View 1: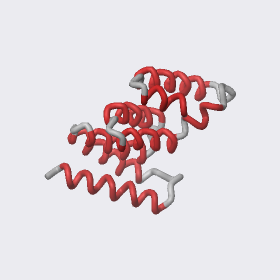
View 2: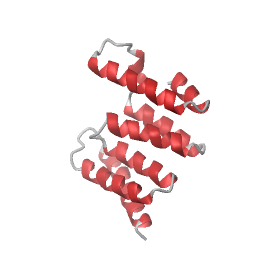
View 3: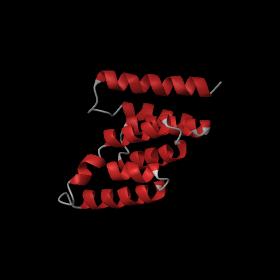
View 4: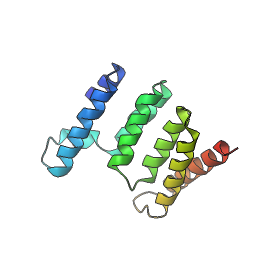
Amino acid sequence: NRNFMRLINKGESQKAINEIKKARDNYFSDSNYNSFFNGVLKEQVLNTNAHWLLDHDKQKDALEIFKFVAETYPESPNAYDGLADAFEAVGNNEEAIKNSEIALKKLEKATNSSQQFKEAIRNSAEERIKRLKK
């Protein structure tokens, strides 16, 4: 995680994304592959990194990480809510609305999240859709 974020902060976001994609592919095909990557590939860790980038004016880098999160965790409503945050941050309101709607659809099938967490995602997505459709 530290190396991943170091590369991002050095302006080498594409290298960081490429490395983490290789790690993901290796990890998911072989659970014995470098258990270190298990910590980096957790959705929560990736989301935290991406939100940190959003908060530090690195919207394009954050967008790439959120895309990776949604690609890696395609059933996660949180992944699409984060992706919507990033699209809104870069000014792509159409994609922000689209991904907010996907997050809402994914909520219906989400079983591993608390009701409070689901409600937070629901509120975030619904508020974004309302705000951006004006």
